[in-house]
Image (cartoon, rainbow, N blue to C red; front, side, top):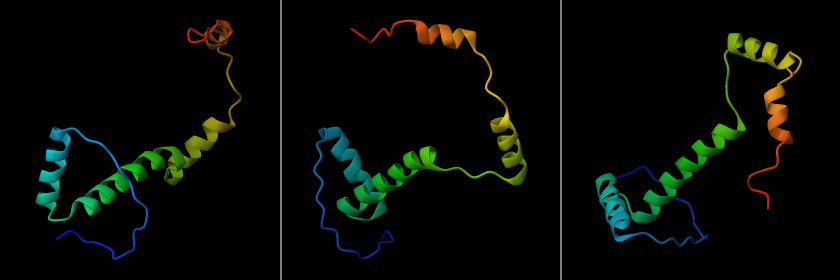
Length: 94
C-alpha cells in the first residue's frame, strides 16, 4: 500500500479523460495499490512541484554561485540583431 498521510480533503476536482487515458490511470492505480484519488493527487502534486521549482528557485555550490554572481555583475551587451527584431512589428498583432 502506498504511504499516505491522513488528512481531510475538502476541495473537489473534476476532469475528463478518454477511455484510453482512464484505463491507463486505472492500471497504474492498481499497480501502486492505492486508490484513484490518492494516485491522482500525489502525482499531480509532484508534477506541480517540479514545474514550479523550475521557476522559483535553484541551488548552486560555492563555485557555481561565484560564477553566477560574476556573470550577473557584468554590464549588459549591445545586441543589434535583438534590437532590430524588437523594432519589427509583431506577426501576432493585427
